[in-house]
Length: 164
Image (cartoon, rainbow, N blue to C red; front, top):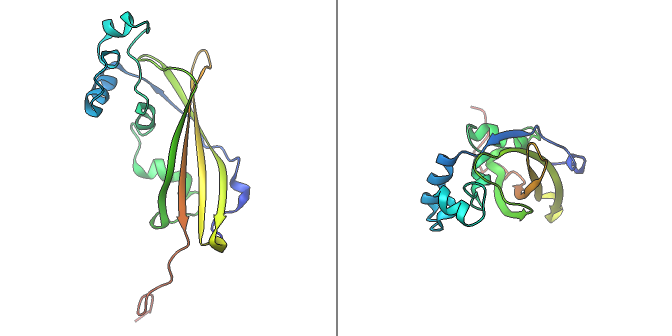
């Protein structure tokens, strides 16, 4: 029996807002081994034609987790009644539209954009898209797309669930 109803598609979660900070960008670039100085050196970034330090491609995924607990990040799933023990990472992709820079204030707007049921409801794939826009000019930066697989709960093993 499917756990999630198709009516959740189109549901929007509250937006989150973050400011991209140079120090955090530099640390991230060093941590991932981004050798291009446009990520760490303001003069190099400007010499390359950028207005400030350039945001590395996957930085925004981590930024959305800043200051949030796992429970906060997973709330969109638990609010749907999903038991976190039954989820698997499905896939993740990024659809870039513009560059982001240090100093940008960004709004992350998540919404559920897809639901697919397989194996007679034993497995569901729920897709969430997080659209990121620059506050001020409204320019769309990226759509981050994540798919989570939700497994049907396993039946209790022999001896489990018995009241003694």
